[in-house]
Length: 322
Image 1 (tube, helix red, strand yellow):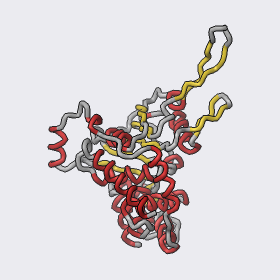
Image 2 (cartoon, rainbow, N blue to C red):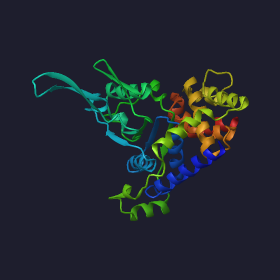
Image 3 (cartoon, rainbow, N blue to C red):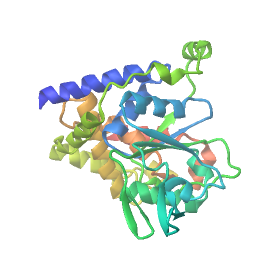
Image 4 (cartoon, rainbow, N blue to C red):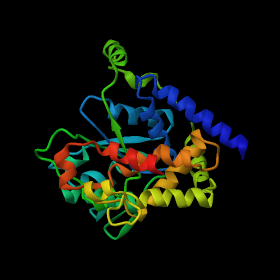
């Protein structure tokens, strides 16, 4: 088992090095992408335009040797543009039948670019596929490929012509990764690079079969009872109505994270323990992923919104109080 864990870490370290060929700096972002892929969890990526969110996901897919597809979400995008459509097919003998043309959802990593620009109907078509890992059309059930992971990007700047995801749908994403501007040294390197064929230099370092084997290992990572209790306690402290929450949480938050958040927190902590920990989940693993797992789940109150405070700052206080 220890030998397999060592190989897993070596493989993902090589993958991070390959991604680093095109993504300058942003090591924490690459680390979180690796955790999300190992945990096989759908993930939000939020950041201003031009921060290589799309490039990072494509680079990760190539380094991991799996297929990827990209959908640019727009207000006129239809569910059929995602899951596929049935067309009337007329054979040489004149007989008519329906033929299913699969959509881009049939891939391993699907990049849903600017998911908040599509209408709720189209968003729900993708989210249904995410949850069920299958598509039903014309009475037929079509299983999606394994692994199937959605990385959905959001532009936090624009408010015109966007359809924010409802909280119940946001809750289905295991974590949210926020991408900030690079430091000046990294930006100089970025400006000097030739980006026309950026992905051509990335080599696949993990086979698809190995990746599926590694993902299956996550559920077997042991979680001590004390750590499990601590993880659940941290989630409960985000809820304004819970007795364990602080006065600041009660004042500044409208809603906290639900039970699915606790499951996702433990699952992401298991992946972190495999990649960067001791092979057994510790409080350090839980605290390392807590902010990313909670960020999109807690809803600030009107008072918090008026103050202009940073939601990450409040999450950090909850983490530090444990």
